Image 1 (cartoon, helix red, strand yellow):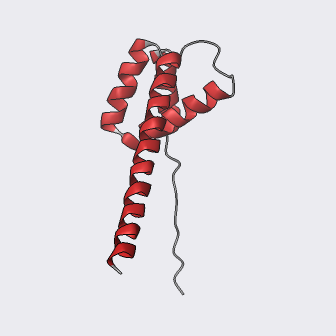
Image 2 (cartoon, rainbow, N blue to C red):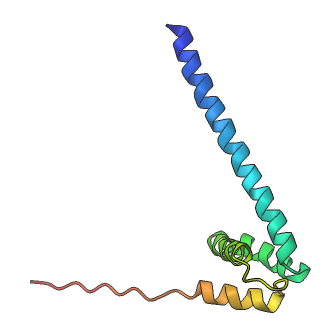
Length: 102
């Protein structure tokens, strides 16, 4: 009976380890992609954005990855272009909720 419990634990542990390895591999691919597509000053700005606003950082990285993979980036992203992209993505659409009382 104990062996099946240990097997379940071992399987869960292996699955968790595999997930961690996949996440690290993905982060490495993203790091390489950003190194190829961003100018050094844009890389520095993106690092600061990651510290200040991780959610915005993730959105920007996804957008840059999409543009790079779809071939829409013809040259490296400059700091100015990154600022514009960050501004556009950080604009929050106002959500308005109205309550009607009976």
